[in-house]
Image: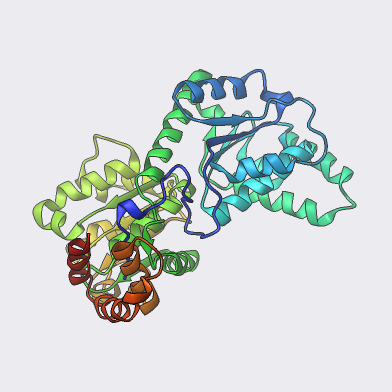
Length: 407
């Protein structure tokens, strides 16, 4: 079970951690720009920096020309305190020790704090980065030769290149003229910042380990079902996981209230879903049977959430389409009924996660935050709080009514 802390008791978004990690670094910058100065400082990087700045985005760009061989602790901290890292991969990016150490730390922050990482392939092919070949690979080979005495460091660089180049990003060869690419990136950054600010987990009690469990299942299974009684927090959990993972996918959509939407207008629900995933306002839902529609879905790495599914037959078209998504795609389905998840018509049965009631210590924590605006109850109320929190932790509706009275 997941529950929401009273808004007035939350830490302000400017200083609060936005990750589910309790040790997450506070946000100071919205965007960190990683680039090879000799390649793009006076061209693309400067144009992008200025466009982001004019859009009102708080961005960090290192203007120092002489960087040396080791990244400074101050710069490492700046990366940790940045919501989004934009990596401008250019031909000689991987020939720089400084750039590669930046990249390693950026990817560590993505894993540790849930930061967004967006690669920009500027006149380089993503496959050259993943394989470390071509002209890009030549520069990295020179760096490896200079650093052959430190194989652990070299291995970290290789891993970071492979992981970052596999993320959804922007390829400059697909945009002409170049300002069109800059506009697209600025729009994407604003969209990511808006999504991140619209959903905070710092006020959600008992969610951290549940997010971790669902993400572990998604690491192994293409489809994951989240089930449990009504009002226990399935949608909240699915939304938290969705917000953390969207940056890793080319297309994504969270379909709320599937049960009601399908009952009201099945065709419209399907059309809206496909329109979002394919970025096409002229989608005809009946085209789902056409080979062309299938080919378009097969070329996209998609994250799709179907929330509140109560009848697998009603959602059959949506679930069937999931089989057509590109390898690496993921689908999350929430339902009150575990049997609905077992009966899905997808090619593989989903892994399932059961959202259970709050643990006693989490129920007490939530009760204390709302009743006393602190993590533990007042000493004189400790016994009564434990009794109320333990009982009401199983009944969210009654719990929230009581909390409203207490406020």
